[in-house]
Image 1 (spheres, helix red, strand yellow):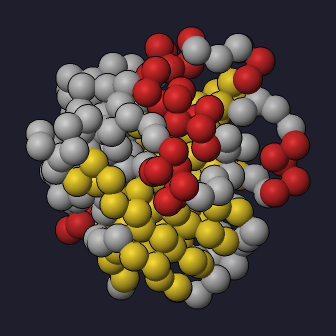
Image 2 (cartoon, one colour):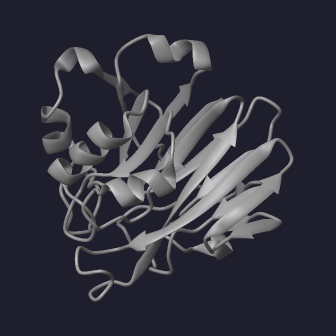
Length: 216
C-alpha cells in the first residue's frame, strides 16, 4: 500500500490492486493542492472549506456520510462523531472513515474534536494505520491525539492537520505531538510518500512524520 501526503488532512491512498482514495481536499490554508488530482474514491469528513474542496478532485465515487460501503477491493466504514468537545455545539459533526484493503485497516480521523472514549473507539474498531489531527484549535491537540494513539493501538501513526512553515491556519505545528514520543519511534519521510505492507508492522518506528508534497 502507498500513502501520499498533500498536506493538512489530504492523502492519496493506493491499494495493492491500484484502487485509489483521496481524503479531505483543502483550500485556503496557505498552500495549494496539486493541479491535477484523480482517484477512484473521494472521502470528505465534513463540510468546512479546508476539507471539502471537491471541485479539485476528479473521482466518480464520493463518500460524504457515515455508513458501510464496498468499492473494488476496498471496504469503507464511516463513523459519525463530533468536531468539538461540546457534542457538536461549536463546530458540528465529523466522520471518521476507515478503509480496509490488503489485509489492513487505515483510519482517517478527519477533524475529530471530541476526547477519546471507549464508545468511539469501539465504533471505529481495529486500526492498523491511524491518520490523526494533532494541531489543536479546531481539533484535538497533541495530547488528545496521544490519547487516541494509546486507546486504538495502531501499528503506524501519521500526524496530520498541523501547520507547516508556509501554512496560514492558526493551528500548531507537529512538533509538540512528536515530542511525546521517543526519537527512535519516529520516522521522518521527505517527499510525502510512504509505502508499506503488513509485514512492516513488526518493525519500528511507529510514528511516520510525512512532509507535505509541494504543489505541481
